[in-house]
Each structure stands twice: as structure tokens, then as C-alpha cells.
Length: 314
Image 1 (cartoon, rainbow, N blue to C red):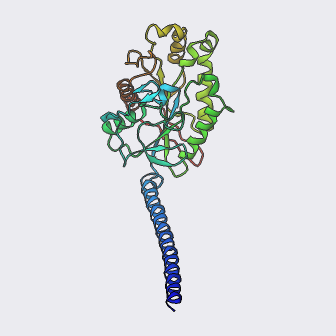
Image 2 (cartoon, rainbow, N blue to C red):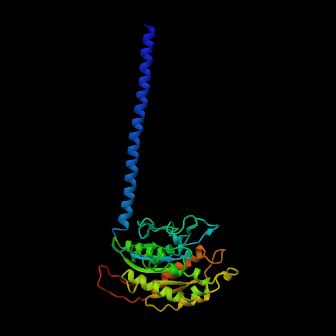
Image 3 (cartoon, rainbow, N blue to C red):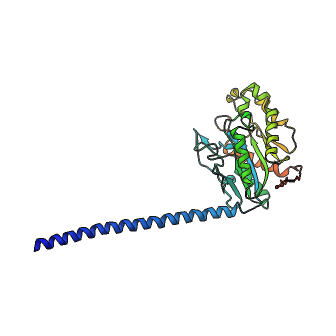
């Protein structure tokens, strides 16, 4: 009898143990469901916050940033790794400066601005954030600025023609930036280093960059879109041996004779140890120069029949 009672008690305890494990598993499952729901809700609320600050504001002042690695940003990059230092002039402004991410979503803009569009760990500070902050500092009523980074490191001017990925991606991202309202105010263009290595590409740079600007304006239905062209800096010695035809490309940039194209000369700005890429301070100086040039220039304006009217700054 005792043995039978022990057996019954043992079986009962064993079943209770199994039941406890099942209950524990069920509780863990329920907790996981609630946790996932909370995470989803949190992310959704964060998405709504970004959406309310950006896509619902129909007056975004949009700037496209394109070119090569100097526009992508190499400030603070050493041994292919960014130092992570963000000066005051490049700090985020959550309410007023947005960035179109690589996943085509508006988000709070921050350094490195070109992250994932072209580079990852070796992407550093460029002129974009300094430019936007300088605009808002000088004109607090300018409106919400939307930055659309599109730079591709190492791309010669031949890559920026219709049918090639850098150009087509730029057009696609620029058009999407208008989806929820806004005005494309200009293109910031820092390009040409690759074309200084070869006599042939340097010789035809002017014709090709003019074609690029004309096609861009045509594809964006903005015939007088302002373009700020950065005139290349002379590389430091001994690195200048690699870029033999920088004089030719610089002259081509200065000689662009299209309306609403203004030039900002980067010559003399500080560069990194590679002799070519601007330092963080150099990028800040360039961003300030571009902002000053944009605000001080009286652009030609034009209204035309379309579902969008691009207002040129005066």
C-alpha cells in the first residue's frame, strides 16, 4: 500500500512539474508577444514622430548633395575609419534638418550624412550638415531643410549620365523627396578629382558637366535649378603628381556658363594626410561658404506649367 501511495505521489509530482514547465513556457510566450507588440508600437510612434516633422510639412526646402568622396565626406577619416567627432557646426537639428535615408525615408539628419548611400565605416564629415546649419543660423525662418545625399566615391564625370547608376539614383531619390511636398532649392556638387588623372577626361570635363546639369534640370522639370559647383582644391605635394590635370578641370568648372550656376573655390582649405580630402574643419568652412553663396545670390526665377513650381531664392 505504501509503495502504491509513493508511486501515485511520484506521478503527481512529475505531472505537476511538467505542468509548471508548460505554464512557464506559456507565460514566456505571452511575455514575448507583449514585448514584440511594445517594440512595434514604440517604433511606429517614433516613425510617426519623424513623419510629423518631415513628410507632413509641405514646405521642405530640399537640397541634393552629389559628387565624389569629398562630398560624401571624409572629414575625420583616418586609416579607413571615421573618428566619430562631430563639431558644433555639424550637430543634428531634429526639428529643422532632415535626411533622405538609403531606404527612402525621411529621418533626422546626422553625420555621417552619406552613410550607406556610398560608404559605411569609412564615411566621415562632409559639407552638408554645416551648410544646412549655416543656412538656418543666417535665416531662422528658412524652413525645414531636407538633405538628399547621392554622392558616389571615385566616380568620374562619365558615370553621371543618363542610364548610369549614380545619375539614375540621384534622379530617383530627388523625385521621391518631393513625394510628400517640398521644393528642390538646389544641387550641391563637389566632383572632379577622378577626372584630373587623365588628359582626355580632363579635356572633356566641361562639356560633360554642362550636359549633366542640363539633363538634371530637364529630368527634374526645373530648368533654372540652382547649382553650387565646388571648384577643386589643388592636392598637396607629393600627391599632386597623381592628379596631373587639376588645372584643366578647375578651369572647366570656373568656365561653366549656365544660368544659376555659382562656384565656390575650395582651394586653400585644409586637407587630410592623403593630400586630397578635406578635413572636418575644411568641410565646415566649405559648408559655410556654400551657404553664404546660396543666400547671397539673386537667382533667376521661372514659373512654368506643371504640377510643381520650383521657387528660386532671391
